[in-house]
Length: 315
Ligand SMILES: Cc1cc2nc3c(=O)[nH]c(=O)nc-3n(C[C@H](O)[C@H](O)[C@H](O)COP(=O)(O)O)c2cc1C
Image (cartoon, rainbow, N blue to C red):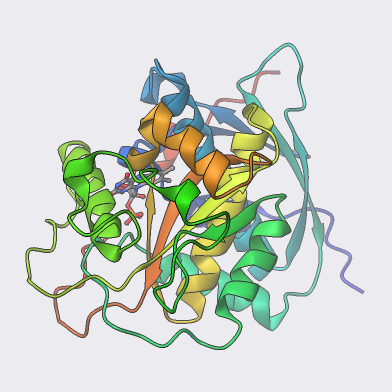
């Protein structure tokens, strides 16, 4: 029986450093931590983002949710299960979570998920033609569901469209006519989504340049959605996003989150109606697939210095 009462300082520092690898829109890393002797606390860092639109606020909380999930994954591998109380303080909406840890022996899955933190990166290259590992979508769906989110593919793997709803109903949901030359069903639109996203994202990050090869992109596009659309739902969506990205990484797939396509309110509504049958809210699109077998692996993006992300403890 493990009688350690709480993680020591080195363990906490290691877990926080791994949490720092969480993805965030524009790599803003909009979170801070407060560590007390008994618990850890996650806060929104408003100095890192001044959300103006609803979409911006969603993305900020998605990033914080990813950091929260990364922290739990890291602690699990280090021998600590986390108990998370989300939005613990009604008087402070920026206090996103209070986290306690109890000793627990790590499982093989805990170790694999934690290793995936190191390997994961947003890969914006065109993905190769690939055969999905058996049960891959079921596994990712299951992991998202554990955080209260659902996943819907934006096309099915046979290339048939749509994944849900009627074909007629999906006409045009993909947006600007200029996006697709061969109708709204094909991967041309997926590539256009991606291109639009990259153009915007590149302005904000020092990430790898867009893939300018002529190879077609064989990414799957998975829409992650939640039944509600409030701040708690956005935080949970970020946790689910992290679970899906790390799981996909763990089974050898390349990934990239995409929010830019959802900045368009009309497109969000169409996705909600046509893909989610009006029962859930689109939160983020996840590109998933087989990385090309080329040496141009995207570089790891930089991160903030951990010390800058820690609140002093108030007595
Ligand atoms: C909620 C969210 C939305 C994102 N949206 C986009 C996007 O629209 N386009 C894009 O190229 N990258 C997008 N990203 C990826 C970030 O740019 C990336 O996570 C960040 O630069 C850190 O790099 P890394 O994921 O390689 O660690 C998004 C990430 C998150 C968490």
